[in-house]
Image (tube, rainbow, N blue to C red; front, side):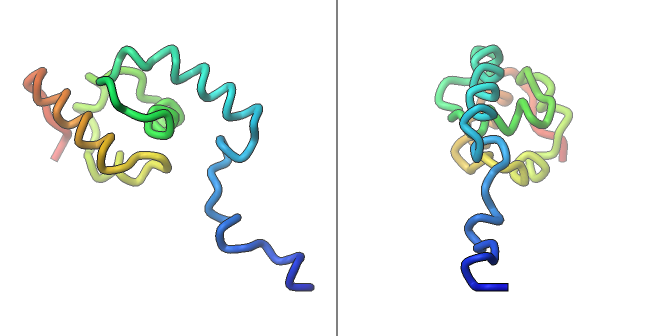
Length: 96
């Protein structure tokens, strides 16, 4: 196999949702529908990750381990911090 035919390491880590313009638009429409259910400041990649995992409300996250959310593609430390703070305001936390 020629070098140009081998998949690059960077290409192997591309998100299947954002790799396609059509898939990204569909995913962004889904996130627009749930965006008000989560705290302001949670970015689109994190919202896409939540939708893809089946989470559409903040209260659902009180049944999830923070470490499991951190494994989702697109979920970063900022989003986790915002979600943690929003849960705390409601008197809830992630599962330990």
